[in-house]
Length: 91
Image (cartoon, rainbow, N blue to C red; front, side, top):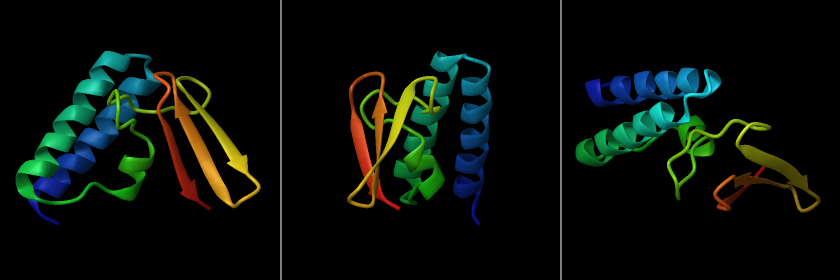
């Protein structure tokens, strides 16, 4: 694991902690910073990070707080952010 990936993991932990403290603006800044680090170093974001962040507003998603999570009969999960953005992925 290189320095950029360690930094992204640390920013993910900080975003999770800030979101649990209901400091959504700080969590949003951590998400933006992690995405910039990944772009500059040409490394991908971890799956857990991609699943818990909104692509449109850069919010760290917490089910029941600022995200609605539903399962569908077709075998996929639908996550809707407060901004209205929707993500779907199989389970």
